[in-house]
Amino acid sequence: MSTNLLNPMQSSKSIGAKLFTIDTGFFKLDGGAMFGVVPKAIWSKTNPADENNLCTLAMRCLLVVDEDRVILIDTGIGNKLSEKVKPYYHLHGTDTLHHSLAKHGFTCDDVTDVLLTHLHLDHVGGAVDYDNGALAPAFKNATYWTNEEHWNWATINPNEREKASFLKDNLEPLKNSGRLKFIEVCDGVQFSRNIKLFIVSGHTKAMMLPLVNYKNREVLFIADLVPTAGHLPVAYVASYDMFPLQAMAEKKTFLQQALVNNYVLFLEHDAVNECCTVKESEKGIRVKDVFKLTDI
Image 1 (tube, rainbow, N blue to C red):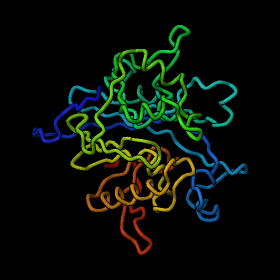
Image 2 (cartoon, helix red, strand yellow):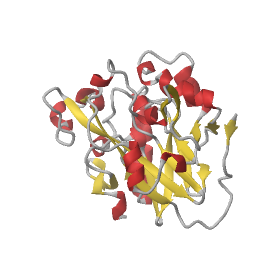
Image 3 (cartoon, one colour):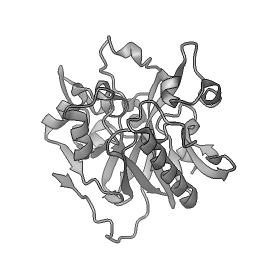
Image 4 (cartoon, one colour):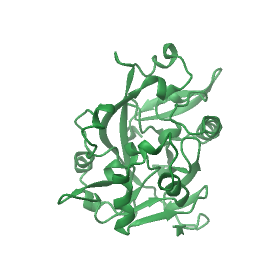
């Protein structure tokens, strides 16, 4: 059953949430796949590739302390990939989900909610881990949130292009735990006092974008709609996007909103840039400033 957590029209004075960047390491993907039809000579200026044409990408999550809730947005790829699959992703870096939480004074047991933008393995993998040899939710006190439209897309006859990203080891333990809940698929639904959710379906069906009130600014966790700052041009969409023309239209809409409302874009996959704002240029909307969340 879908859950509408708060009425979007419900009024209450908000002082904003507290935000913490949670770095979970890096991985690599083919640069051509990350930028689709855009020539390498262009995309490599912002996202340089190695000798194997692989780009380094971050798996950057966001911890939101909102009143009495400790909400983790996405969880990275986790540490349970098989030895057969692991080489395809070239995992590296010293940051882990647990260490990043600890750096800010939190443990997995402090997390009350895990909000999954979508269920691809690099976003949901850390939500499940081994417990005494059995797979179980990694956050023992948390409720796990997705939406029914995306859950069904991922679990009921997933399409040939995406099914390799929807791993049963990441999804079945959540379903079996009894702590998986669905959010109503509705733009602007209020997830918590300072988080609203918006739905896009170009990358995958019903991906959720959290918009967070923070220090009198609005921070948009833009997930795979804009994976890196190099993806701001509307036509720069990844081959991983299921519906590229829709992804382009959605990107155009949200970048225009970011321009008008001076959103901070929180970049989940950019290996260098954590956050950015945007500006209008003769070529369209482009990066204005890049900075860390702590600089706000």
